[in-house]
Structure formats: C-alpha cells, structure tokens
Amino acid sequence: MMRIALVAVAWFLVTCHTGTPAHAGGATGFRQFQISASDGSRKLDVAVWYPTQAGGEARLIGDNVVFVGQSVLPDAPPEPGRHPLVVLSHGFSGNLLNQAWLAVDLARRGYVVAAVNHPGTTTRNMDERIGSRLWERPRDISHVIDELTRAPAWSGVVSPDKVAVIGHSLGGWTVMEIAGARFDAARFDADCRVNTALAACDVYRQLGAGADSEARAALGQDLSDPRVKAVVSLDLGLARGFEPESLSRLHVPVLVMAADGGDAHLPAELESRHLASGLPQSATRYIGVPGATHFSFLNLCKPGGSELLEKEVPGDGRVCRDADGAARATIHHQVADEIAGFLDASLGAR
Image 1: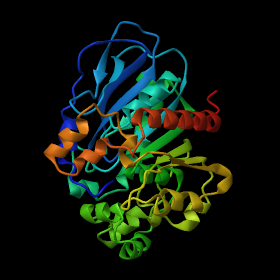
Image 2: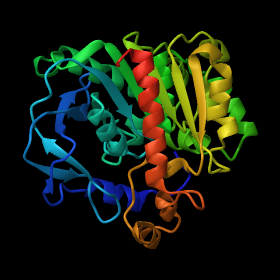
Image 3: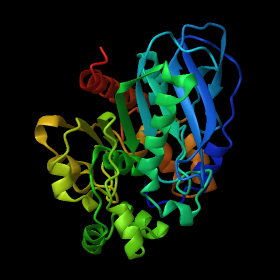
Image 4: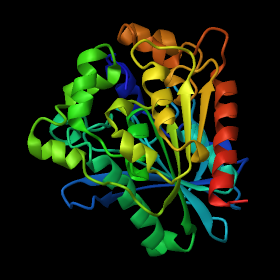
C-alpha cells in the first residue's frame, strides 16, 4: 500500500515462472487452484503450501529476474495428520505469492498455509469497480477457510480449531476485520483530511471505496470470523479508520509487526503502533522490525533487481531496498521466528 507506480512490479509478479528443477530439501508441498467466491460473481485463485514427506525433485515457484523463487514439490501428498491452518492476505496490487517465503517457512514447521488473490486489488486484477468493495477481502479469507476445512481434499489435513490469518499492508487491514475490528468510513475520511500524506488515504481514494451510503454501511459491517484464533498484521494501512470501541473489544491474540525503517507515507506511529495502542494489551504484542521497510515483507530480491525495477519505472526500485545496513534475509528470519512462536503459543500448535 505505497503511493508509487507498481506497473513494473506487477509485470514481474504476473510473469513469474516455475524455474528450473531444484533438489527437494525441506519437503514443502504446493498446490494452486481456483474456487468460486461466496457471492458467486468472482473467481478466487488459491495457493496452498503444506508439509510433506514425499521426495523427488522440487520446482521453483515465483522465480523471475527480480524475485527469488521458493522450492516446492507440486501436488505432493500432504504429511499425515491434521495441521494448523494459516491464511495469507496480500497488499494493494500484490498477489498470493508475495509472502511465499513465509509460507514455505511455516509449512516446514508443520503448518498448512494458504494464500488468495483478492480480485480488484491484485496484480492480476486491478479493476477498481471490484476493488472498491473492500469488505469482500475478509469474505474471501473466510471462504478460503471454508474450502480448506470442508472440502474432502483438505478437511482431513487441517485442524478446523487451529486457524490463524496473516496480512501485509491492505492485507493487514483485511485480517483485522476478520478479528472483529469495525471500519468507520466517516472517521477515516476525517482523519485523511488531517493526515494528508498517508498512503492509505491515497489507496482508499484511488479505489473509490466508501463512495456512497451503501458502501459505507458495507464497510462498517461485522466481518469477523469466530474460527480465527490468532491474527498477525504486517505493516498495515487504514488503521486509523477502525472504531476504537471495536478494537478494545477484540479477544483474539494479535501480533502487530511494523517496519522500523521509517516511511513518511506509512508511518508506524499512525498505522501499526496506532492499531496496537487501541487493542487489549493482554492479548497484543507489538514489534517494530529493525531495518525493515514496507516492502521487506515481500520475497527476497535478486542482485540487480532494484536497478531493473528502477529502470522500468522510476521509484519502483524501493521494492527491493531495505533500510541502510539491513539484509532482507535476516529480516525474514526474525519475522518468521516471531510469527511461528506467536502462532505456536496462540493456537496450541506445539
């Protein structure tokens, strides 16, 4: 959710390929499929990473000239037993592979991890007529949970009583809605008139969200899902539109992680820290990730990736840049360890 042109980034993400075969080591299965959304008017692309005991040669997914791919075993049989389920929600103009690095890490720890493309706000579909319906994002997540807890192919693989959600940027807003936060469009509009530089305000206006009374009512509805037992927000936006009363009433454990690298358009104090301050302190943990920028939560970039993006669209090179002196691989290790520890404790997964 940054106020930059993501044309080049979107192109590279859309044109990712499976890459050359790589030796399997870590045993992560992978499947990608499509389901109908709950409203019947849209199709949802879904990817699932999961632990497997299968051997053989793996394939790289999401590998391209900019981003480092992840080694998986396509369509391998899942490891026997039921596993905790985590569903990922990508940011504005992102897609289901944005946090593939985290999905693989959690799958290696015994989790089943699913990600979905949100129509209207994904690199594969930026139709603002669809994207303006932000309330469909939490519904998409709930529908994926439906699929993975009820469909015969998955119902014996996941634990329906151990479900968590993780979201980055606009995905962070999405998972907070799942937790029970309620959005007040009038509150957000008023705040954007004061904090005019916030990237979240730009995205909201660009989408045309909350354009009429019907949309405002839909944005303010209860979109919580009681099956979700833990929530992780990664450098979210739109936090200042949440009703304070709804935040104070949340009973779901929440891990709020913010980029500590500093960004005037997505400042932690007005987004992630603001969110954490309004949540019940007994069930909330806030972590400012040292050296992280907003894009540090995306996949690793290859050497020269920043320069390539910058050449295509000036400004997009920041997608591959972390704070001075920071290494994205190190940031990923820290973030993954913190998330895994939080999920293990919150879900009773270990």
